[in-house]
Image 1: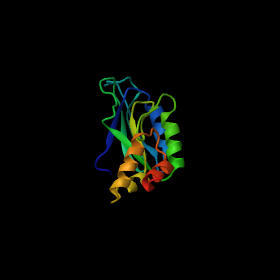
Image 2: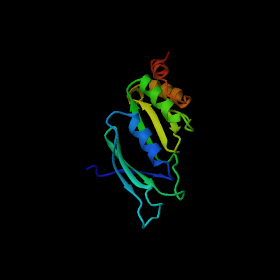
Image 3: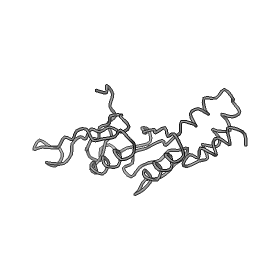
Length: 158
């Protein structure tokens, strides 16, 4: 069992979130669902907790109330291998009420913040070439959704 599990607080829409999140990446599935009983505090039969894996990482959705709301101080980061994966995830996560932000960040329809990043960007930012790192940083900070080809051009100084 995974020692540390991120809990994401929701006010309803748990089933919709489970369907979306387990459809995003391979090795994703619902693990367990617990329901409210007579003791509450939610309505009898509503989901209380839902455990799931996304890309093998365990998460729990908590069906609470409006006391807590998601914010950008906590985000889920996905390191994509290519532009096609970035484009696919960006489209899915910004649809139906989600919104893009800056530098690969977005908020999904539930208010959960994501960073749709790339392994290539991380490699470029770890370079010993300070000028190339500066160019890449300046480029990705102007982007909404990351563009790997544009980042590679910036890295090369083109």
